[in-house]
Image 1 (tube, one colour):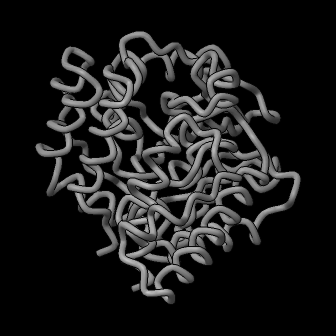
Image 2 (cartoon, rainbow, N blue to C red):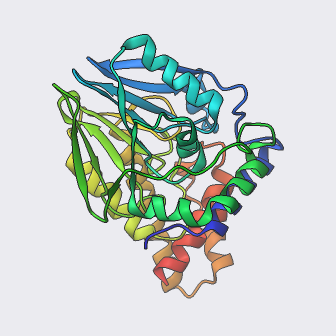
Image 3 (spheres, one colour):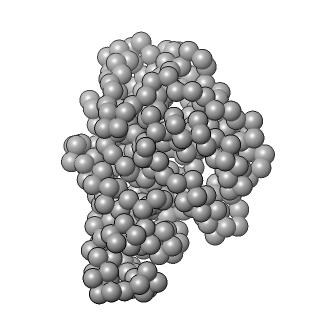
Length: 319
């Protein structure tokens, strides 16, 4: 089972919250808005995301929805009842068609806790690894989410919801909503085991979940090592979509395929430099000191994510 370690995720959330001395972002204040990308295809993005992304700041969860002739499919269910309610209000403002499907791109609570508030007639779609992680780690997961997103953010009330449709390793399913088809695919290990990519081929729109956090200067997070797997997965995604595809990342404004290329270029640079350091017999500490990659700086969390997570992860992976 390809699942990111809970300890790495706890460290990630704890460190980012500590850097700001406040919740990573506040689920009680975020306001979501919809952005039409094509007929029936909408991104759902936190207000102010474009300005925040330009400075590399952490941004709340992004998602979206697709309206067909017969039904609606939703991407992500958000962190809590408040944000889940905003999401469904945005859908209701565009259509009275029934919501029949909801995809979680990963097990992360800010992408899946809202499942608790989804009507029973909605089929929840997850990767099999995501469903297994939620089943076995939910109590610990909500504990660290409360620690890092704050008490009183609606996390305490959440209960796990079982998935109705599972995607297997390397699997793909297509959902016909009537006049529009949504593809849901596992390209391999990305940020965590069980990451799913959601696309509307005829509209050239792709949701990446946390595999692509946001546009440059944001960086990928190697939460559990997997430098080579993550890079190869992103390369496979990049090769599978047209250059003019619009990308809805996990935590940022709508961007383009350049965001995926930025991640690939960064991971290739990390591999090259860390391999050279290992070849020279450098220790982990010496490698972290050498592999600066300042050309990829600019992300507000660069000083933690790059030396504190990604270089050590690459060192372990390549050794």
